[in-house]
Length: 123
Image 1 (spheres, rainbow, N blue to C red):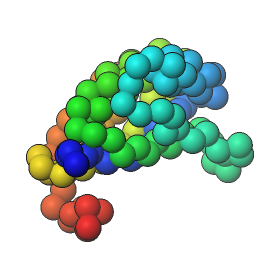
Image 2 (cartoon, rainbow, N blue to C red):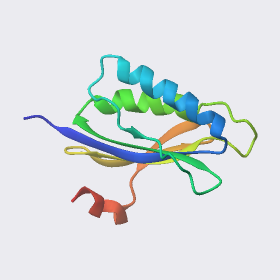
Image 3 (cartoon, rainbow, N blue to C red):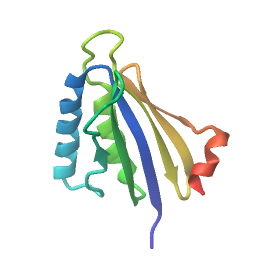
Image 4 (cartoon, rainbow, N blue to C red):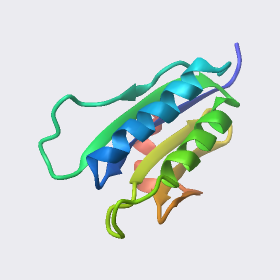
């Protein structure tokens, strides 16, 4: 049957001009030979001053490598201003290896242990 990983989270943009760049990255990855397709949701209306995009996918273990690479590219998107860098948070739940958190901040992607209080998300 295989081992699966669930990845879900969001990206916040300080400037609407960054959203098309994420769409380009996501479409290029989806067009390639990957273990998943799509996963991104872009709300039509953003009720706040920051624009957000959401991602969710469940795939066979190993698909997280391609998604991590994509998110590294997203985290490195140029900021229109110093306080408008892309940021985000993703929870990666692996059936065997457990859960980690991927944080998009300061132009990079950090993989850190997930807080114990979030274990209910894996139930």
